[in-house]
Length: 594
Image 1 (cartoon, rainbow, N blue to C red):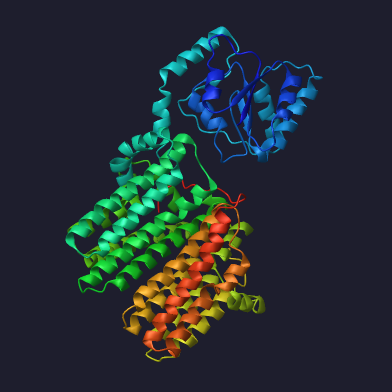
Image 2: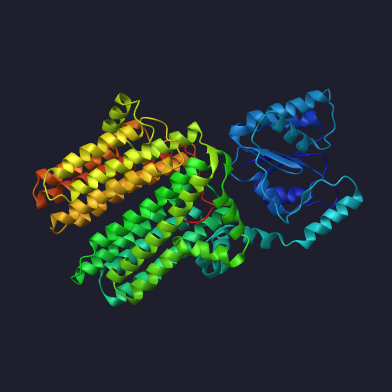
């Protein structure tokens, strides 16, 4: 149980002790800094501890935000400071310093705030939550206390808490058609002991049932699938809202939230393809194309953000225009809708599934995602060309990790360390050679094209990716690898080749998503042995072309299936090991949905 050290005697009529206990704290009272330091030392090192001014006046949710969020080692609001085990040493030092400064007899006036000042002076990262209309203050006289209490009474604590459970930036469909009621579902779940992880799992199971319904190939099945897909999305919103409402963030929850959205959507694509096949319509190529396009869109987003999140001198006329448009209400919603975020996309898929056919659903999805990808990529290219910024070594390393070069490309990069400084052009040239070879009509031409592609991949990363458009290198590699698998499977023209290719791309895409979320959590890329074991993007591309050239169509299908299973097993086992380990970071997306 966490411990709260209340410094001084509570003012008559104060609810501070009750508020702290309702938040799960064991409350201890210190009469001076000597006793505060003694009580702090008595708290086990593996438990959270808080130092709170007994004169504190404020909302309970302000204390909840400041003292219970599990994501931050150190956090504070006016009149209160807390430390998790990772921040205990820094807090102990700061309290000891304040104790020594008063000769061991200093009174407790403003101790919590003075400790926060000391932590800041030590260079510690102290999280200070945005309180908005919530009150958190330490009044020093009766009049100020009465004014503070009136301010507390004037704001509905629960209403603020419920509103803050919803993302501050979300899509039009989610904001206006889901969040108005999903927040109440989240509150009900939180009050009945349901965790975000349980709701996330329920969302996954609902989506899988939806995919199974779509796979029946019947009109009733399609209608049920569309309804269940929307229900899955509602639950997907609820899990994050529970986390924000109850501050129940976790490492495992971060991993589940980061990966299940993609698993649900791509499983649904497979269900639609299976349903269409029952009706004699083969749309596996469309399903795989939709998955490739959506994954490449995400890689564009991730690469651009990683390349620029810590860049200096970030000035761009394009960015300024974008900020200006954001000041006009209707343009904000229009721009959020045309990028086809997850809410709009799933609503569109659900309605089209229920009302039309899988083929039409995929046609509309491909056109919509292609337009969204063109719009967002063009805007980011313009920003990159018009901004003046210096890319950091960390950003260059993140892009290199996202590129996913394997042993062959890495060897080429070491040998050709003095290659021309034009990574994107080199990557595009290699991809163009590969694309031409795939349509050349010669059986072994794709192998030669893939070898050239592997060499250029190594040359592209022989120097740090610090150019204005070098963030496009990872998306180019993703499109090249996934596109190669799609084209060769389609050319095989045998039953099972495209479904096997779908499985392989899904397994590799999971590896790339896993890489992204590790980097976003400042945990680095997956271990080098894993990248070597699954060959890197160039190794897998070369292997698939060799298999297509050397084997019959039916043998190629079996080989693709075996490769998909092998890659999936390796990346899933390593990913699960990492994300459930105690040291893995908790990453929760609070921005716009992908």
